[in-house]
Structures are given as structure tokens and as C-alpha cells.
Length: 344
Ligand code: ATP
Image (tube, rainbow, N blue to C red; front, side, top):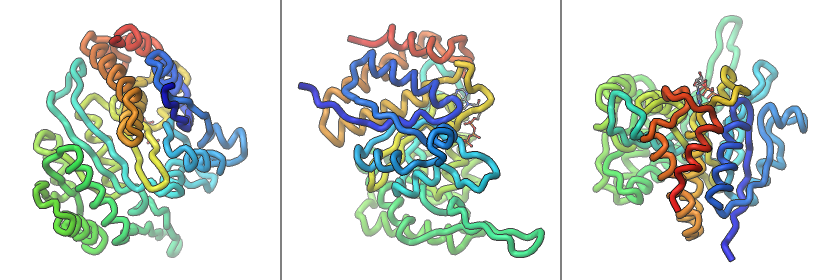
């Protein structure tokens, strides 16, 4: 009897339900040993329960420890804090992992990009502490704690070691934010020294120069370690190096579990048209299968993940792509192209 894993599925808003349908179809086609339990967050949840992040959703993630989450929209100007930020904070999902790789069949300026953006997910300018000092003067507080800086640095070095990554680059602006980014740097250095990771190459790059270096030659980088806002911005920059937001998956790890989600947002400009590229969400699903394969030693998850990966690599190589990548397929047409290419 195959092991079945219950995973929380949050379809989300905008293109979320469309890319979620793509994943569920594909998972059914590969007979992935996953039982999705659907819960809501964002505008969809607000309409249904009056809350953007219902406790039933966070409780379900705590129970099952793994979720696949579509992009969620936060209503503008009604005093709501971001759903995505609230979820990461409530579940203490402190490490965002975003692998950025060149894909065959998606030509871009560089053909051999292979980076991982590691983003601290719980503090920095995302703390949401803003104040009106006096009329016309506001402040936004950037919070850095030794605990969170050290925790993401420890995670980064352990990740590099486990995955055979050679180098960690911390991008920062400690020349200006001497205390907050200075603390981030100190924690990274200490994590390397005290954790015995001196075999992992380490460098510190001021983020503005880092952006220039990234677009000039991304192949000189390996793992990029950053505080929250820098990680947000650099993730999109790196997505642009490999074909855009339609091809970059992500995972958020923490003590309460793991939530897999694409880097892209709800893309309201194309929502409801059935044309969104589901690949980033499919790739997030593949990361989730790999996580289950590793953490629960399940070879069926490993097999399902490998089959999906082979299918999308083949589809892209055959020129089967959605509009954002220069192809002509719609969301479900791309899924059909993948299903046709699933290896035995
Ligand atoms: P958020 O603030 O919620 O992170 P964002 O401002 O980064 O969102 P997105 O919703 O990610 O914006 O969309 C940015 C642009 O990328 C839009 O033009 C959108 O249509 C496009 N885009 C994002 N995801 C996809 C996708 N999966 N397929 C095709 N186009 C996409």
C-alpha cells in the first residue's frame, strides 16, 4: 500500500486557481501519492469567511506540515496586512528558498544560470512598523534581530553543505545601514566560523554593485543570502535572467512546516484568461514532492517528481510554451503537452 501524504492546497487569488488546476491535473496524471486538502487565504477567503487568513487554514498547515500555496491578494487600503507576510510570520516560515536555473528551450542572454536566492522571511522592512511622526513625515522601521539573522545564516550554510553548493554571497548595504545590515553580516560570518563551514566559500557584496554583477555575469554567483526586502527584489531580478516569473518556484521553510509557492504574484492583468504560465507553480509542486521524498523517505514522491521534471524539460525543448515565454499554448494546453511527454 503506497503511503499517501495529505497536503494543504491554497488555490489563492488571480491566476492562483488556474495554476492550481494545472498542478492537480498533472499530479493526477502521474498518480502522485498526494491527497490535497483545500483551504483558502486572500480575497477568496475574505469573501467566504470574512477573514483574509482564516485560522482553519493556518491550523491545517500546522497539522499536515506541508502546503502548496497559490498567490494571495491582500485587499488594498482597508487596513489588512499582507496575507503572504502574515502566513510566513504566523507559521514562522523563516527561510525562503528560490532556485533560479536556465531552462533548455527558454533562450535568454545567459544559458547557464544556476543560483539559489535565500531570503530571510520574517523581519527587516516587512515588519510593517510604520509611523506618522508629524504631518508629512513618516517612518518605516527595519528590524533586525540577532536570532533571525543567525537562524537564516545557519540555514544557508547547512543548505550549501547539503546541496553541494560551493559559495555563499551575502548581499547587503552595511555601508549605510551599519547596525541592521552590519548585524546580518556579523551573524553570517559567525555562522560560518562557529558552524565549521569554512570550506564553503564566502563573500560579501554591496547590493547595488551586486545587481550590476548579477546582470553582467550571473554565473559567478551560487547561493545568494539576504534579508527580507533585498531577497524580494533580487528574486525578481534573477527571474528575469532565466525567462521571467513564469519559471521560478519557491519554498518557505520553518519550524511549523513548509509552504511551497511560486515567486510570482496573482497577476491580475492576466487572471481569468486561462493564459498564465503554470510552470513556476508546477516546479513548486516538484520541490514539494522532493521535500516529501527526502523528509519522509518516499520513493513514490521522488518518482513522480522526476517524471514531471522530464516532461516539462522535454516540452520546453520541443517549443511547447505559454505566451510569456514566446509560445502559443494556454495554461491547460501546456499541461496537456506535459502529460503527453510523461515518461513511463
Ligand atoms: P506581488 O506584488 O503580488 O508579488 P507582482 O507585483 O510581483 O505581485 P505579479 O502578479 O507577479 O506581480 O506579476 C508581474 C507581471 O508578471 C505581470 O505582468 C504578470 O502578468 C506577469 N506574470 C506573473 N506570473 C506570471 C505567470 N505565471 N505567467 C505569465 N505571466 C506572469
